[in-house]
Image 1 (cartoon, helix red, strand yellow):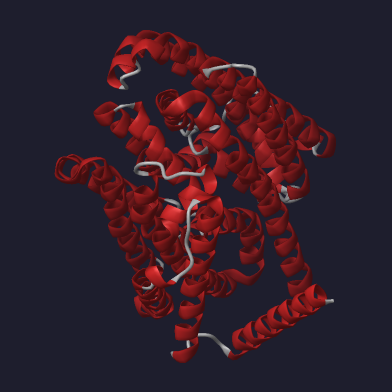
Image 2: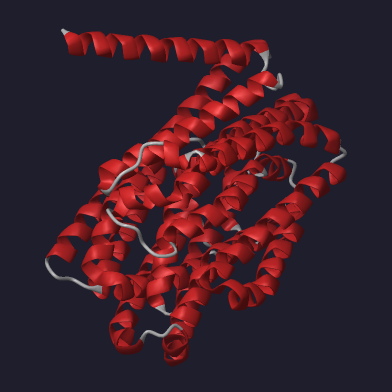
Length: 522
């Protein structure tokens, strides 16, 4: 068993870094293109684009939970498993993508006048309709992509996934910039998005067919066992995914309906920047999921318990100070990205960052529950999150205006995530005390570091323009992480091996800095 740990650890690290690199490419294209989109379209038209994207994104999550279900089925399909059963489920994923697209088209066609009026599209309604049709085509392509992606993820061919994702993201970014520079508007931008999605689906299908033809989707009649697999696992994942999307996307639609597209677009800029916080942990957990299934089959509950506590610990140490840094550095971060302050964007980041961080930390429990085949443990908490969000939105909207919308979401996420972690430990017979001892020190250290940094902002570097914003953001982030690390060292939270690695990192950084200074003098 010990001998297998090395190759498994190396594979997990390689897969994580591969997908993380691809996601960095995707995020980087967004970081580069979004300011151009915002500048070319203007605040109102950009807000319309955000509202249309949110509307279709909410519809796209109605995938019956097939994304996670199919990955699980492919990952668990050993030599003794009949591949025909897996292929039937993959065929269900293929067919459902088309069916969902046709249903959405019918809904849009019959309800567009009402949708246009609700979202205050005004004179942009006609162009927005054409853009919505293009975006719908992209949604269909994404649905058809589901089984092919599941095959590649299930057999852990992350190199192919990363390559296809990166190439299509870069191509889409180039097309977007060219189209906008040539004077294209909403419809042209949506056409670029749809075309990129279709190309990505085609490339993934070809890659999956070439390497794993025995897992090609097969359209056919589902057995009772197939239906039980989907309803018993997939639909519970579906509820989780759908309610999570509601928490993210519904805010923009409410802001658009209450205050107009411009305010919704400004808030979306903050959410997009905040999503960079989600990048490393989300993809690390996504990549670990298939391997965790395999390793649990070998090592049992004991291995899974060790994995859960290690994941929980490292996520907390990383994300708690990252959230504090985003709270105190939100305003310079927005200035660095767009060159000027955008109303509501920085405030949205500051309000949502702690809640998102806690929710991501709970991802360790989410993956563990899914490995154990108990995704239903998530269902209650995500429904609770949406219920709290909806219950608080109107009162907070009246009290504090547009900021009430992200504030309601933040409250819902924090309360529901806390409930989920406690419920998960009780339901799986894991002691709650271990959870509290793991999370409390990083949370307290990050909170204190954030308060000290916020009180010291007048003493830290700052200035006009992007250069001043870069200085302010880097100084605040460095101080938060330095203070958090120091506090964790003082309270003895970090283990001996972690302290040794930290000392080695500091020594290496110091030597690099001294070497650079010496090189400059020469």
